[in-house]
Length: 401
Picture (cartoon, rainbow, N blue to C red):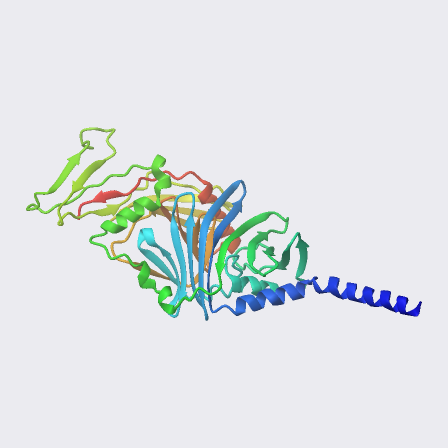
């Protein structure tokens, strides 16, 4: 009788041990995932990112490349208009590159260490380990870890839910606001933790377009802004050397004689001496749908530039600011613009944010917003509502050089 009781006690103990061994708490999952990420010398993460703004959803394809220590290359392609931008960090600094414009911002910034990033593994584990109240629930065969996030330039983002499989592979990252509304979702397609990258994979020179008077840039700019087709008029004029018999040009209309002519020309150049350059014309002024209270439009100026037109809107009142608009133009030579600030995801584009100003390009229009009286949240609200307004802008118009 005693032996039988001892036998059942032993069985119960074994059962408790075996069932307990399969369970993990939040600390176990965070530690294991952290070790998995830290053991990787380089990785390539591919997936999609969705940004939810009111009734709109902005979808990107994402490819994040990482090399210890602090080499990053993030390729972001807007799936609506195929607009590509690259966030690059190497030994020389932090860059936001727009290949179609042949331009880059260079930042004096600690990005990405100074904020959360839903597509970078190191940033995700940093948020997990910094939250003393991190929690975890097991859903089917997956672990869902909830932790606070740190977006100093976007106070609307409060916490994230990170979904991992039983092998600690990242499946999904969701970022929510204080009202538990989903604002950002990254769905991971693949992660290669043994990518074998080197510093040569993080060179700025790889994104510099070597062009002949900007012809390659023009092609990239047209392809990258196909979404403006319905609201734009594009034309191409080519200048050919007089002794180039293979160069041909066909004009479709004469603006001086036909008031309905949009200055459209079609050109066909086969000779090596054919040259073209691109300029643009802003056809309509785009106004913000949001401005701070007790603030009003006090001035509106349109000025001619070497490459087209520029609109300057001045707002007065309690929260005065200036908004500059012009058609986005591709540079013939690679242009680097220094910024003291940070890269920032702004719905459908990556913007350059400084202390009291913001620069971004959306729907083939470049914007510059500056105001000493504006808070960061007010700057972002104005910019986000510009993106929701209808843009009417001509496409690239070729100028003879």
